[in-house]
Each structure stands twice: as structure tokens, then as C-alpha cells.
Length: 170
Image (cartoon, rainbow, N blue to C red; front, side, top):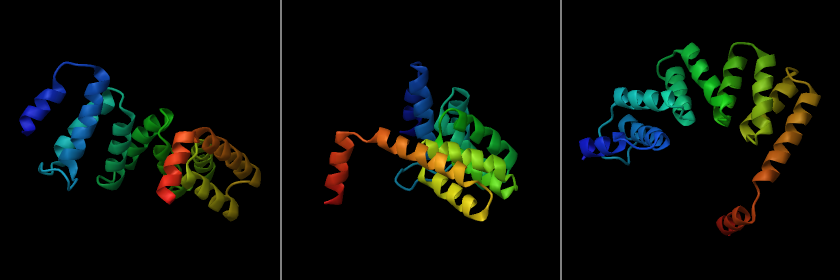
């Protein structure tokens, strides 16, 4: 089953389809319980690398997370997080901010958290609020990020989303 599946996703087709397929397949090889496939981090890394080379943003983020958390290669993780963040990955932006805090670069962390907050990320906004309370960020920076956060949240509201949200709450 696995060989047939791999041949199917690696067959000639659209580049976007291939990157998504490689990314999805990497989860099967990594560690997720709901699959019947064996865990194999090497294959997951190979697939994530191939998808990242083809421009898949989420794969860049996942590789960065692997190198940061499993391999303790923070420099390599930073490069991948930066690529993903420049392509709009909000969690990568948050992780960059956290790394900058860890390294004592509060001004860079504030910038990462402010950008993430303006994209609508609650974790970035909360981190910026904490940095403001500690004196590492100014109240103006926090207010600007809060305004951007509100705008981003408002822009994502649609009648369909509101309906689903109401159904989930009831």
C-alpha cells in the first residue's frame, strides 16, 4: 500500500499538488498515531525537504520546528522559520520572536511579535503584552499591534464563519 501511494503522489503532475502530497505524506512517516504506517523520521525529513525546496511554506515551518526541538540546531531552524515567516506563516513568526527573547534580542522579538499580532495571532499579541509589562516594548508598539490585531480579526469575519461559530457554541 505504501509503495503504491508513494508512486501515485510522486508521479508527474502539478508542482503544487506534489508539494502538498509530499508534505501530507511526511506526517504519515513521522509519528502520527492514526496512520498504519511505521514511524520513520528520516523519510519525513526527506519529504519535508523536497516540499520545502519546491516552496511549500508549511514544510519549511515543520523542518524548522524539527531542527529546533529535536536536533537542537537553532541556527538552521531560524533560517527555515524566517523563510516561512516571510511567506506569511504566523506561527513561524511567533517562534522567531520566542527565539529572539531567548537570545536576549528584545527589539527583534518585539518586531516579530508585532508583525504576528497585526496578522491576527493571539499568541504574538499576548507575548507583546508581556514584553510591554516587562518594559521591553513600548505602550505605543503594543497599541499599534493591538489595533492591527483587531483589524485582522475583523477582516476574517464572514457570515458563514459566524454561523459555524454560533452552531459550535450552542
